[in-house]
Amino acid sequence: MTGKDKDNKREDQATQSLNRIRVLPIEDGSIEFECNANLSINIKIPAVLMKIIPNKEKAEKTGGDSLCATLKGDIPCALSGFRQEYMNWRNKR
Image (tube, rainbow, N blue to C red; front, side, top):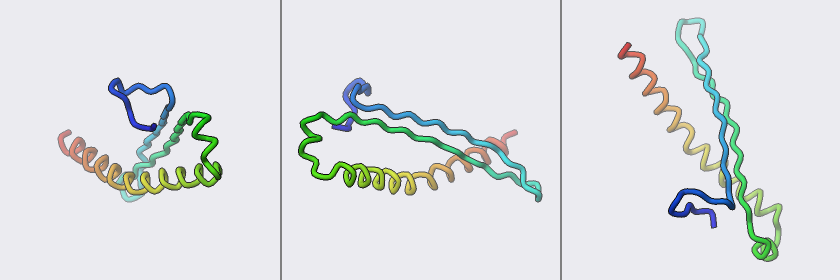
């Protein structure tokens, strides 16, 4: 239901993300990255499936908690990779 089809295009779901990264100078001359992100995920569930879900609020909370746990696991790795690539770029200048 939530997988991608061959064309990577689904009409029953949509994900949008807006990420803003700023470089902030620190008093000691170093810099700090500040990242703000907004994530929106819309999934259309057929009415027939909605009828068999006993507690929709619990299902939504469970799905949201699962997404948050995944992001908390992925973000530190992504930020570490971003930092490393920035340092590589900076050292080549």
